[in-house]
Each structure stands twice: as C-alpha cells, then as structure tokens.
Length: 209
Image 1: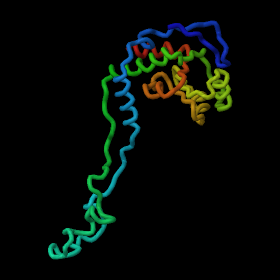
Image 2 (image 1 turned 120 degrees about the vertical axis):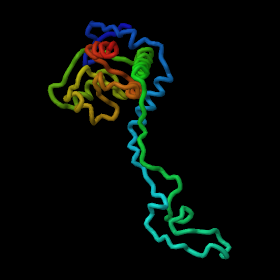
Image 3 (image 1 turned 90 degrees about the vertical axis):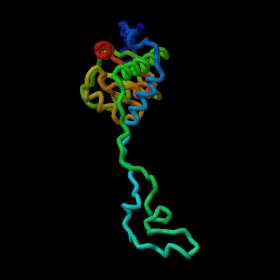
Image 4 (image 1 turned 180 degrees about the vertical axis):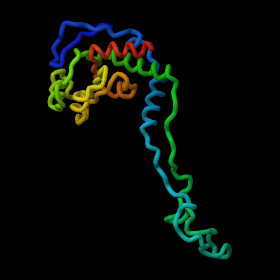
C-alpha cells in the first residue's frame, strides 16, 4: 500500500512511502486483538482493592446472647457479617490481574490493528520532524494543519523525542509513543494514526525480527 508523505504543515511533499503488506495488509484476527486488549487493560489494574473479613474486624468476640431460647437466630459475636460493621463475606482481596500471552499472538494482534487502520484510510505519514523546544502551541498547530483537531490522534515516532512528547502531553486527544511502545489498544483507541517515514522503516525492522 502506497501512501503520500506530507509535512507538518499539511502539504504534500511529493514523496511516497510503501506500507509493507506483511504489517499493514495481513489477514486480521479479531480474537488476537481481543486477547491483547484484554491483557493491556488487565495490566493497568492495580489490584489493591481490599475489604475486611470477620477475623480482621476490631471488636469484641463476646457472644451477644445465649444460644437458645431467644426466638432469634444464633449469633457468635458483633463481628458477624450479618450485623452492621461486621466483616464482609467473600469480599475483594488484593490480587494480580496480569496474564501472559505468546509473542506471536501479540504480534498478530498489532498487525491486525494496523491493517484495520490502513483499510479505513486512517493512517497519515509525515516527513521526519522535530521540535526545537517544548511547545504545546506548536503541537496544536501541527494537529490543526493536518485538519485533525477533533480527532483522537496517536503519533508514533521512530525513537524517543522529549520535546515532541512533552509538547503533546497536556492535550486530551493526542498521544505520542515510540515504535517500540506501540500496542494494539492505543492503535485502536486512536482515530488517526500518525507515522513518520522513518517510523515505517523502524516498524518493518521490528516485525521482521
């Protein structure tokens, strides 16, 4: 798939970039995407939720009233789950939600997500650029010149660029990652995928390994 390269002012440069079919034109696997996104979201969970069971409640263990003859249900102590302030039955406990996936499956999921973006013409290739200084105003202008102000964008750089990253960090609909950080969730969550000409080469090398 051949895509025109444009500059950060939104004008065509006359150059073209070939998006490799091995990455941007594979047979998509929805199930692989589902598993990869599920893993990503699970790994974001802290898992620090906790409620106290009856053995952890501070309170007297005195038997409230005699076992028989009251006409009411028997009760051992005020810490019983049946009473207000008592322990909770089968409450949440700290746990790790993360799980592992095969590398080949994760690779297929990313390729499938990139393929869907290519099929929907939601990939924009920019010529390589950098900012001289940290400037949110410059990043807003970049997005505006590309007519993507109302779109949720994901810019993928070949390598870390602190000026570009920090310039975009305060913008709600903009996210900047490196090719090594690219994941299925971010690709699908973005309306437009912004790549640089160098990023395409970096992705091709990364997926070829």
